Length: 292
Image (cartoon, rainbow, N blue to C red):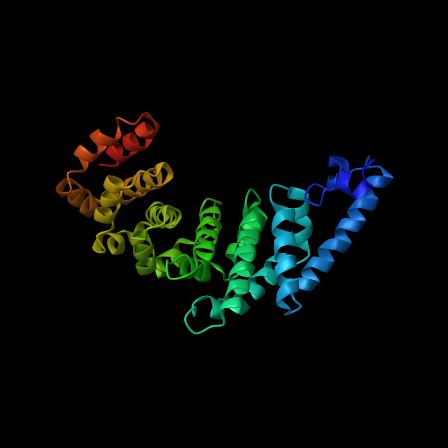
């Protein structure tokens, strides 16, 4: 017969709905498990703030796995101050991530692994949890995640940063348009990246700038972003990237005469005819044409 702790793996913990919601009906076993879980959360957060790399690594990994798809764990870690702890750990390790040539290789590898788990943990705390998304976005980590999405960093860090940023961008009201417009040049650079994750992030961010902030339209049209997006659509075969680029182009064209004129020069109608042959993109192409 298996030990009891194997019956309740660390990700699930076997808490009943009644116990999670604080409604009478959870049995004594539920509350015992919740008490043990709370102790474990406190220990993990304590290890995150220990400044000991191996403890930070183990704690970041455990937190990431505990909160993925588990709203109960998200709330427990969130209420315990996990966002602040994770951001602090990330800020401590960022200086080591960009100096591969001069840094000690083993120290760099550990920092990369820690940063990857920390960034993924922030994304998991924000995913399908609006309060978490707002606090993560408001923690000051967004400019750092945009910077870490650039290709000069380790692929693990780049992909984790891009995925977490996409989660924040898709959470309504989490990331302000003003913050994105302040990093417009960086977003244009990310649009030219070789990573599909990073390009999708840049297209989502630029589209958000257009939809939610009409004042930013002149700046965006002056950078020739529509031409970049069209070129991306012509060369990429990644479905999500294509969809994000189409949505970005539609957002840029919306109520923007200057960008619409440049779209005609780029022969965007021919592009739409080519893309509409792929049924999955029909609705996105229709939105793009209506924007014209």
